[in-house]
Amino acid sequence: MNLTFRPHSRSKVLAIGLLAIIAIFVLQLFNLQILQHAHYKAEAEKEQVAKLTLPAKRGKIFMQDRGNLAPLVLNEPIYTAYADPHEVEDPNKIAEKIRQIAGGTLVKDFEDGLANKKLRYTVLARQLSRKQAELLKKENLAGVGLQESDRRVYPEGSLAAQLLGYVNTNGEGQYGLEQAVDERLRGKDGRLQAVTDVRRIPLTIGRNDIREPAKNGDDLVLTIDRNIQSYAERALRNGLKAAKATQGSVVVIDPNSGAIQAMANYPTYNPEKYNQVKDYGVFQNKVVTEPYEAGSVIKTLTMGVGLDTGAVRRETTFNNTGSIRVDDTTISNVEEDPINPAATMTDVLHYSLNTGVVHILKELGGGHFNMQSRKVLYDYFTQHYYFGKKTGVEQAGEQRGTVIPPTEVQGNNVRYANMTFGQGMDVTMLQSAAAFSAAVNGGTYYKPHLIAGTRANDGSVKEEQVKVVRQGVLKREVSLTLRDMIFKARQLGVLGGKDRGYFVGGKTGTSQIIDPKTGQYTDDNSIGSYLGFGGDSTPKYVIMVQVKDSKLPGYAGTTAAGPIFTDISNWMIDYLKLEPR
Image (cartoon, rainbow, N blue to C red; front, side, top):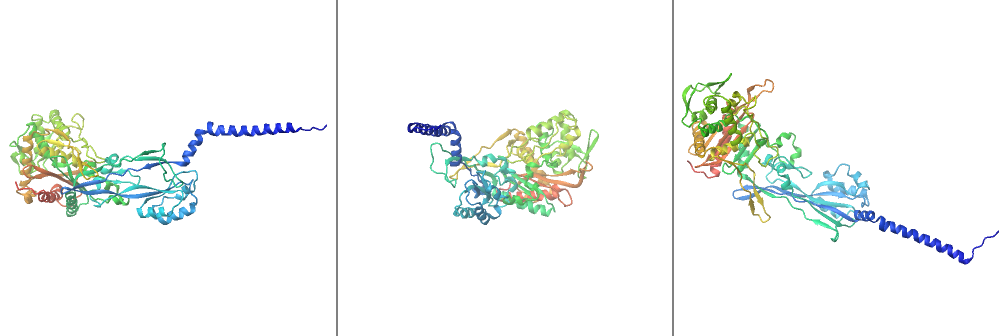
């Protein structure tokens, strides 16, 4: 049986087949354009639209210099070379050119990222110089781009290194000011979303594109004086050498505003070469990060408590027998002072009598060592002088120190007797200098600070308001009396010879260090401190010096720290053009 198709039947079959093919195309187009629209649109945007970060410039840092501003930290442009492996045409050629140009700034195993077609972004080299970036740009390599950022540069080298800190390769502030106000210096990155060409270069901005400009970080103006900072560092370095010591610190503060004019530590480092530092302890600004038993410099503040409460007066005398009994412990003077049945309060500071300040503690309790005497001293130390609290200075890692309350078992009479002469509690140098400033400036505690203001693009400076933490730390008349006693105590001593005629006063302190093996204080090593002021009719500066490991005979506060104070103080008299009293 033969089957034959008539012409009109064949035409019908062809028409049906054609309709089926058209239907398939229509369904496919429907799938692509309607059902899969969002997916393919996203894929297209992924190919054509780039989301780029517009990096903010980190704020610069300036310091004072005889009425002008001097740059302390600036920025230098550096570049990151990156690639879009999906757009790379010749990975081997790019790898060869990058090696030739980038040298030591190459990212480890960058070839692996370059060959990975699943990636859309991989870093080839970091911290390229402008010259290297220009050479790379001239090569016109498909799929390779450059992103500009900044690197910190330090025109003054290691000057003020610990108070500054540094910025790591990720652009993060580390230590010091850089870490403490990192967010303020960093600013806020902007963003750009735009259609790009094959080399990821943005084309014309379209209606769906986004452009948010970067907000650069603040350009900060510090209270640090370039000349005072430089001299303080030199005096510290020379003084440590003379004392055969290897570690020390200095802080200079304006007692009438809390503005820190210098803050130095030795040994030091260059922030531009921070990655070459072996001992990470050198990064610490020990003026604020290392509380310690400050020793007899605290006697000036204990005297302030006694005078302010009326427990003693300037003319008060006591029977100095050379020792005093507190519960089951005998506390003695360090020196073999002559027995004096009528020692004055100025004698207490001049001769640094432990018995004298312990006598003040006793008088705070109505003639007895008791809870009342301990509570009064604790209140003044923590609520007037702010020991045991952070000052809030713009420094990373500031420590609060330790003052044990009188209500705790360890806060007994013996501990509080020791606290009157700076043992049995931990304070930082800045806490001590700030409290001393309040005690001699008339009784106002100013917040210690490093930032004076913000520099605008036109060079003008918007000053920040000085913060008063407390007025009436001591009554004004008590403050005036105390500073005159401190002045006379220095002039009576051997350290007063070079600045006689000028209004300079201060107090030594030598603290024993507890031997970790025995748990007892030892004379084998000690910390020497000197805390004092200088001025004309009123104090114009407060200086605190610490020397950790003096090898000189005698008390380190007198033989090691004292001469450094005198050196800086004599220089400050000339620098500030102070008149003799």
